[in-house]
Picture 1 (tube, helix red, strand yellow):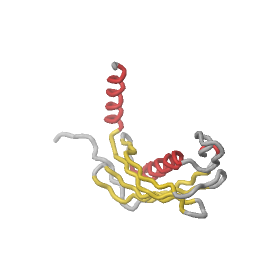
Picture 2 (cartoon, rainbow, N blue to C red; picture 1 turned 90 degrees about the horizontal axis):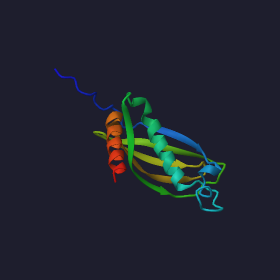
Picture 3 (spheres, one colour; picture 1 turned 180 degrees about the vertical axis):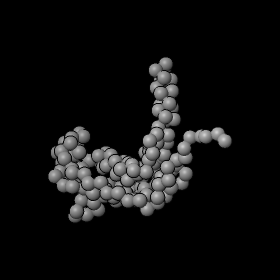
Picture 4 (cartoon, rainbow, N blue to C red; picture 1 turned 45 degrees about the vertical axis):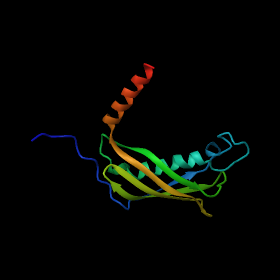
Length: 142
């Protein structure tokens, strides 16, 4: 019997994780080119969502596997001032083959500041890096 690559990791639906992000000046809209807006910047919120989802599944990924962010649908509802902690809550709502779908809620202790969904795909690290290298080589020839 031939031995193939290991199957993709099984990750339980309902898995939850909370990431606490101290909002610093470096994470502000001001630092990203919106002068005077000392509030949590939307691109940094998106980064936090990615980090929360990655952390949620980290202990389930065997060596040789990664997850790749493929979609974020996020509504940034309210500003959060520098100096505040934001809590980003993710919940794994569905596992469909290699596709993982998370719901997202972020809050700052006063109010909900964001809601949305995030999608990730499981991949074999070697396969992804091979694809990336092939593309880099093609681009270098342009």
